[in-house]
Length: 275
Image 1 (tube, rainbow, N blue to C red):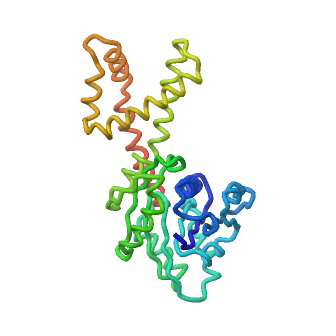
Image 2 (cartoon, rainbow, N blue to C red):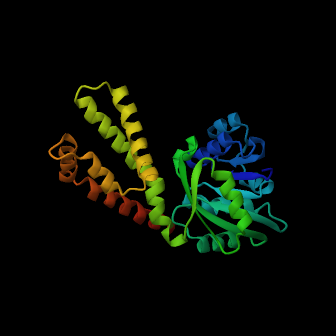
Image 3 (cartoon, one colour):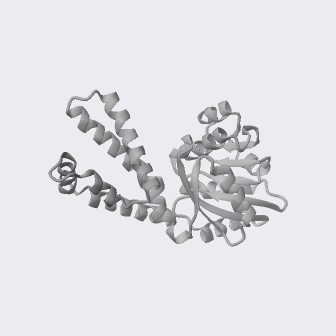
């Protein structure tokens, strides 16, 4: 794909997306621009071959599809920066990673700063495992986004993520599940490894095998088509060691805690959009 791809904000999530894109080979680094307030923080982008700048205006001027990878509180500042360089009409597809900001609200904000821009918007929720080609990216387009634009986004991201189109009202909750929950799994992996270390296992071995166990368990759910509860039952022999561990998890309210974690992240996603 030879279109010009831009990123306003070169933080961890934007970096994860670009690493996935470049690893898959679907887009060239020379056709990627990124802006950030501190050029020294974009060194790794330069090393990947992308064009780096401190000017949001330069990204806007050069690019047809622009990812918004900044904090919600920085949106007005970024659009104001671009505003000073817009003197003619231009078609731009904005891909928003702004948590909690609904498409209709983003359109209003863009229009207030960039009245000459014919902006279309796709709202996405990526996750950091996209860096290694094992991510999930949820997306929802506005009513003006064409099927070809959706296909272009999917082609760009599908080599590094499972791309799934969803209705916007599910974005906050599913975003909590796919984008926040990897952090929960890192805590689970660390805790399981700590448990093995407590029993005398070397830490490096415990960490490696705990991580692989989580990967394999997820693949079992995906490939077997069985309910996780059934897969759990298949491991639990009567009076065995696994059911003893399950009882300990139930006593510790693991399931309730994870349910509450998803709820807390969903609520926070909505709060971020209201600021």
